[in-house]
Amino acid sequence: MLPDFEFSCSMFKKYGLELSELQYEKMDKYAEFLAEYNKNVNLTAITESKDILIKHFIDSILLTKYIDFPQGASLIDVGTGAGFPSVPLKIMRDDLKITLLDSLAKRITFLEKLCDIIGADAEFVHGRAEDISKMPEYREKFDFSCARAVANLSVLSELCIPFVKVGGHFLSLKGPNEEIDPALKAFNLLGGNVENSFDYDLESDQRRLIVIKKISQTPTKYPRNSSQIKKKPL
Ligand code: SAM
Image (cartoon, rainbow, N blue to C red; front, side, top):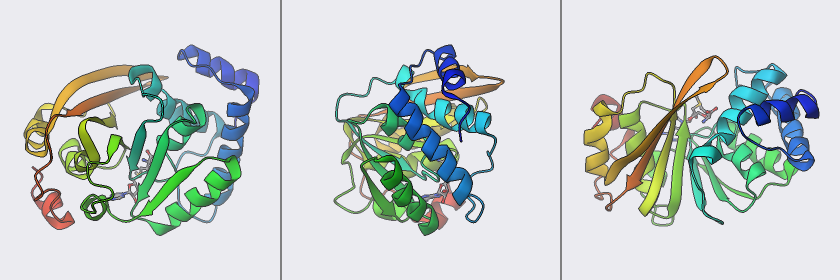
């Protein structure tokens, strides 16, 4: 369950966001199902209702303040876990076409059930990003790829940039300590370029959103296999 509608609205307002009753109801159902499912399947360490509201939902939705998602844009969420950030985004922006990718089957099963409960249309993909992005139906097919709390920026770039069309963007949701400079070589090799970075506060936490624009095709040799990526980040 989430805190009540009034309190949830006031927290949204504090961050310049607006929440309708219908969106609140969907998030409330999401929070309830997440807490219930989390008793048997490890999905999140965040379980207090106020924390779920702020650290999962508002953190995810804050993306809409910094990114102007065109109507109907496609977005793949790499290592989505329990659906963050893309499922809360979908609740706020039903026009977005979301693809939920995770290497753990039990998380994809949770997401299929969740999206059925809250009436969210999504595509579900079980697999590792480094394998899925080699498949022609997923390679350079998305307007946006995004990831929160999956890996460091160099590793993440190799997992996420191959999914993005030239002209599209990779959105990396990070904590304040993630430096951009060590990943510049990786961006360059993968066809990306830093377009922007935003620092902002979320209650007592600091967040950093890094926006990478895809400016040229990713060479077919990327991504490498997972052991190479881990052993020798670009
Ligand atoms: N993005 C979610 C969030 O912010 O709450 C989940 C973060 S969780 C710490 C990392 C997730 O990434 C896990 O669900 C894990 O299974 C998935 N993952 C890690 N490496 C992956 C890969 N190479 N391809 C696909 N999923 C991956």
